Image (tube, rainbow, N blue to C red):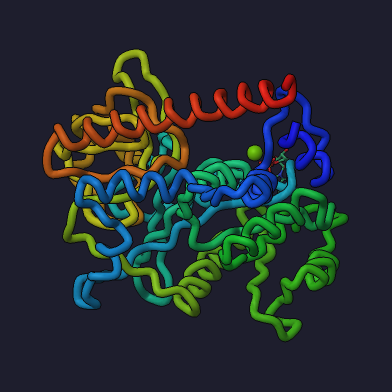
Length: 367
Ligand code: GDP
Ligand code: MG
């Protein structure tokens, strides 16, 4: 058959059930005289939302400088397994200095915000509490970029390892600036200079070597250098990033993690990217929709409203969104539901189209 011939000429061993990659489809289209247009899921969703009069990019472009207020940086901790990501996130969590909170941060809701004294001011930093670049990549795959700064954790006794390189590749591909935390400096065989040396080969040159990347020696276990690391994050944010958002509009953001809770139903930790989220808002997150019934912060306290870069756990969605699903507040409940239903339908259609493609290829092959 012609299809198989073309495929064969393209060097693809076409079998009946093999699915084709996008590039192959495009070439195929040209050969057969069709214009093949690949529509990414993000473009499709953008169009879907435009059908409801929602153009989020336009909305951002229309914003006045005066609408924008400084927001905290959002930080992800990445690095090789066992280099101390979890321990470091715990150590940072314990530095929280919010006045009047004795116990500090107690709940694991997928993200937390700490307050720290920097240059004479109280400043907030938001941390994504699921370490590793898998979460980072999963979110990026859904078109969501939540991270402003990546902390790359490298154990000083181990030096750079395969996942160190992977992590820094992901951050660099996303254009996210890196702060290097050289961890485990309490260990007798720690060699922080070697880490700096090794990372120059990957374009991460320490300030003390004439580069522009901040390296901070820390021990997550012994609580050494944690404050310096937080300062480095804020210095990096202030030096090159214009982190501002408009808090005075309906909230938009991203689901960080979500689960089904026995008593509370669907609980989703969302990160507000712009606007302010309030209890009572109609909200759609991916294909989940509902009304914000209650919100909780990382201290387990009820929250009435959440501003940009604030992570909160939301109750009231009818189902569980996926990590990386974007969310937005709508004027009416009905609109949130309709957007969710249209997305469901679009996902079903995409599934069907995929199955059909396979079947028609099968038919071609038999002919
Ligand atoms: P992750 O896989 O990157 O999340 O690493 P973990 O945070 O689970 O740490 C791996 C191991 O290294 C654990 O046994 C930690 O207690 C230990 N560890 C983490 N940070 C330090 C440190 O600063 N010094 C020492 N000596 N051990 C550490
Ligand atoms: Mg861990």
